[in-house]
Length: 323
Picture (cartoon, rainbow, N blue to C red):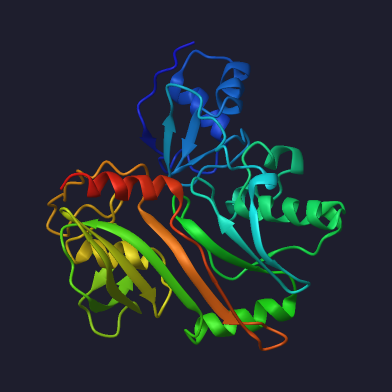
């Protein structure tokens, strides 16, 4: 069986069909069993994530990539390795590793637990870790409720609600922008301390999320940027979110001419010019280092910090060595 297939975008005619059917049609001359083996071997990406569900129905404009070699599960994708910082009947706070999606794609919500274990999300890992800590089956636990999320490659602190009350109260705090969220980011060049304020839209005019100059269009996004440390040719930034729009920090820094090292999406300017990334970061150099909010029932102010993880610390040390 041929194992080569150029990345492709799902056409309108292919939308709604299963991943296995579309792959079999695209590759040509292969059996259903061969296609299923490719998918089970973690050789197929849909978007930026491995897809191991042969029955996943594809959507128009999704990008499918057939990898040359199977992609192993992230070493951290095990509940025993997940760090729980706080757990009570209403909330759980965990340290998200890089390489794991926060939540599952809607098309995968009906997966069995056995199938989820092949490609777990942070939501899965957290629920399994709670079950281990409380010594009870995960199916007996209240479901986790999503109040915010981090991108797959971003590491850092995440809170899940474990009750309807917590979901409502935390949601209110997020909407009022009272939750403390601070990130560390490594960018090329030197960016001075500033507040970046813009209105973000899903399509700025070239199919990418970004800022718009049109009045009363989009959602206001505010990022407060401070300098954590100057490095030779680079800057370690501290970015505090006032609002929490999708990819807000990544968009704001890229539009300021300093895309996060390891960035793969927001390197292209509206003019079409592509900004170079010569940092050779091991992944997106973005880490959610601080999280704080009021407990949804007691009102107690809770606060956590998480140091920059080892892979990014090594990257920063390598950049320092370029002096």
